Amino acid sequence: MKRSRSIILFLLLTIATLILFILDLATGTVSIPFQEVVNTLAGNPDSQLHQQIIFNIRFNKAIVAFIAGAALSVSGLQMQTLFRNPLAGPYVLGISSGASLGVSLFILGLPLLGLSASSYSFGIAGAAWIGSAIILVVIGLLSQRIKDIMVILILGMMFSSGVSAVVQILQYLSHDEALKSYVIWTMGSLGDVSSSQLPVLSGGVIIGLMLAFLAVKPLNQLILGEDYARTLGLKIKRTRGILFLSTSLLAGSVTAFCGPIGFIGLALPHVTRMLFDSSDNRILVPANILTGAFILIFCDIISKIWILPINAVTSLLGIPIIIFIVLQNKAFSA
Image (cartoon, rainbow, N blue to C red; front, side, top):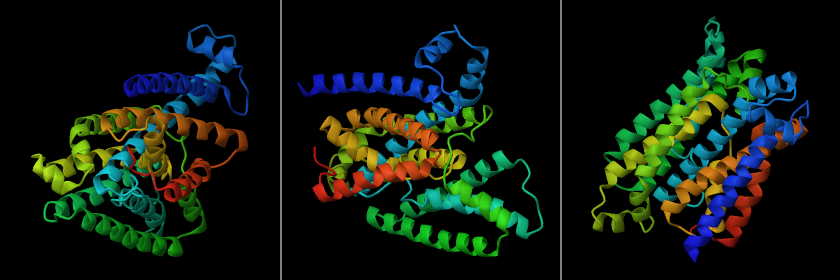
């Protein structure tokens, strides 16, 4: 009975995500009828102008919303299960802070040295990725020597605080124009990923998702804690490494190209657990791909209708969910 319910939910979520994806293509400054979008995607465009708007402007952004939502939701699920903490998100390892440091050094630091930021778009993405990777390497090395997973969580938070202090110093010293560019990056954006960047973003996320599926069985063993998992023969250090690498590829890639997008990775795993009434990661990993994609596409539609930063929309949607989860204390109910 429960298996049939899950299959029906998967089917409904898939259909709903597809419909929302088409609505996202139809929504914008120029409104395009739903049926016309369907006809255009089927290769029978009613208008050349609308066809150009759909494929040259909106299609990339909708794809990015799907990819980013799936990546952040799955990475949040992994971190909450690994740390056994309902308030752990994809950025608990300092990934977001590392990305912020890289971007701040690129946007705010180079002008202070009298240098200009060339190759701006790829430069920001590359700086964010390098910053995330450095934090990942440091955490990975420490995890080889530290047995307690909560100590690693605390260290990640300390790294975040230290990096935030450096970023604040750079903000204080920077010029107005550079500071404005950095603040805009922190608001997040799904529309800044070019056609040449999309394969790089997609590649990082696909590899991260493959690692997530590879770690499904170890994740289920970790639900009751690392000590219990050890009795089942799980290699804890190896599993941590896979999960850290997967999360860094998923959250780091999205942060690099889209900026820090909050609350998707924190809130959606809880919603998915309640929706599917399960703690089995064989169900939750693919389910989070769909729920994350659905919600971020929905947030993109809202941001276009009211002309708001995507981070503002995800925060307004995610905060009530987190408050509800904390009050209900159902974060890990099966």
